[in-house]
Amino acid sequence: MAETQTTDLVVLGGGPGGYAAAFLAADRGVATTLIDSMPKPGGTCLYVGCIPSKTLLHAADLIHTAHDAAEFGIKFAAPEIDLDKLRAKGDKIVDMMTSSLLKGCKERKITHIVGHGNFVDANTIQVENGPTVTFKHCIIAVGSIPAKLPTFDIGSKRILDSTSALRLESIPKTLLVVGGGYIGLELGSVYAALGSKVTVVEMTPNLLPGVDPDLVRPLHARLRAQFEKIYLNTKVAKVEETKTGIKAHFEGEADEKEATYEKVLVAVGRRPNTASCGLDKAGVEVERGFIKTDRQRRTNVPHLFAIGDAAGEPMLAHKAAHEGKLAVEVLTGESAAEWDPRAIPAVVFTDPEIAWCGLTETDAKKQGREVKIGTFRWGFSGRATTVGRNDGLTKVLTDAATDQILGVGLVGVGAGELISEAVVAIETGATAKDLAMCIHPHPTLSETISEAAETLHGLSSHIFMPKK
Ligand code: NAD
Image (cartoon, rainbow, N blue to C red; front, side, top):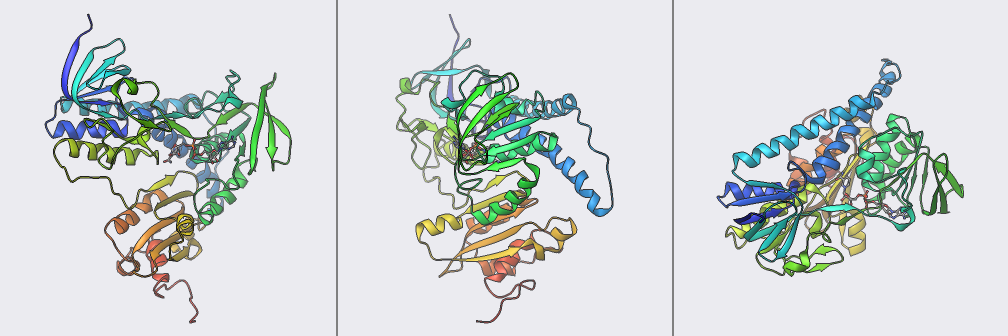
């Protein structure tokens, strides 16, 4: 008979949300069990998401940097790419990081169970080929999986999703990327740098729909040079496998009706992974695939909490981690704790990167909100110019009446590292004047943030603002 274990808290899913929750709970003295089907904690982010993709994006960056060095009078030969070595480097990084998380479980005396967990009822989870675990509380952190489209369901190995594309089995001569969102552009950039001729098909009028168009423009311009083609307002109506590849039939603005590609990457979004762990047996309510929660991350079954991609957009690791910690705060007695962020940062790790937090200009327009916008083009930035990359823009959105910073958007190299200052400014209720008065080091890209804020107060040295 299968073993039965009893614990205070089960965390179901060991991604950045799940392990952050389990670690904090254990640190607070809660007897904790972490159940995950992978051998070590880490989830999508570490195994098939952020970490492997950023490793490959770093490789792409090295190739671009070597290429761009010619502008500074330094010329390198064309790169020789050893795919096995690149793959091994990625695997080593993932192993180092997941091993360190496993060590973190051991240090905290968390019971780590490897296997797929299914709810039997609201207080019991059965692990496939493993024990039955009964618990007082559970944090459901089961994440998300790539969305599939029936059009591409033709049983061909040439059709990839983000997980198989990250395995980097080969560098196809030609790659069609369906979806011009985060994954399509990040992985499309990797394959293009490694030598594939990449075509991106996006069904809406813009790459990265929802992101402010002025932030997308510099990225689009650079990708136009790196990619073979970018088709907007275009859909793939049908695909068929031929001897040489996948023939795709386009509908929309593409300047060709059909074309054949060695491989196709489908990156049309992710969906919550809530259909395969028996949530109905626990009585947990799900809406459009997402687990419904209140502001304390409680589901409709009060001792069950849900966090991360499975419990709502945005599907971002750092949001999941914060929700996980909040759930632990609540279940360990912090009854006033609740989810109320003003600014969740988002970063697209393309070249240039795009990052934003808080209110976007697009959303301000939709809401009819009175805002002021201070923008600073990186052409005026000393640092951006010295590194040969002044194709950036920083903008600060403030409340028109109070000057309080509501949102910040950036496009440019290193934008992802710069956005955190904006998160702090928004969360602490800073005004644009506050930001403008904080001395930023020269010459750095961080100055673009204070200069964007300065433009709202006529203080910018680098932007001439004629008197009205
Ligand atoms: P996404 O929502 O970012 O982009 C999907 C894109 O596909 C959209 O632009 C959409 O308009 C387009 N699309 C949908 N159906 C299409 C069709 N039939 N033909 C052509 N285009 C179509 O989704 P994603 O890129 O798959 O990423 C999923 C999620 O994973 C993201 O929302 C994000 O939360 C997360 N993610 C984050 C990062 C990061 O933080 N850097 C990186 C990768 C993924």
